[in-house]
Image: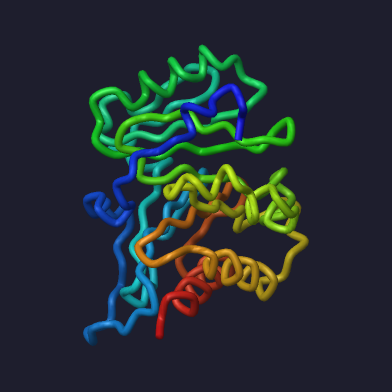
Length: 236
C-alpha cells in the first residue's frame, strides 16, 4: 500500500456485511426453492459494453453494474464525473503515479454526501494506494495488469495474496478481467480463474468482474461461464 497514504489505509472496523443490501442492476433469475449456500456474495460488475439483463444466479449471489447504472456516480482519475446525480459512487481508479493531493480531493468529492460506494485500485510502482473515504463497501484490487490478462497479479506473491498491508483492510476485494482481449483464454480457463479467486472471498464479501471488449450477453459463452463459476463457488 502506498506509504504516503498509510494513514488512509486504516479502514473503519464496521464489518462489510453490515452495509445495506445493494440495488441489483440486473434481474436475478432465482429458482423457486430456497438455495443452500456455502457463502453469499455481492458481484460487482464493471462492464463497459453490455451486461445481460437477467443473470442466472443460484440465489447465493446478487449483482450490480456500477458503470451502466445511473444511480452510481462514476468518477475518474482525470476529474470527469458521469451520472453526477447518482446516490452511490465509485472511483476509477487510485494509482500511486497520480498526485496524492489531487487524488484525495477527487475521492472526497466523489463520495461526498453518499452512503455507499467503491474504490478501484490499480497496482503501480509495486504498490497499491487506498484513499480512505466514508461508507466504502469495497476497495477493489485490480488483479489484471492489462486487458490481455485475467488475474496475473494473483500469482505474484505479496502483491495481493500475502500482502500484509492489504490484510489489515477488511474491505479489500479482488477484481478480475473476465473477458480478456485478445481472446486467448478458453471458457474453462476463465471459469477456473473465477472459481479460484472466488474461493478467496469470505461469506458476505465482494468480488469484482471487469469487462471492456466483449459484451456479456444472455446465453453467451462469457456469461454462462461467469454464472456457472459463481454458482459453483457459492452453492453447498
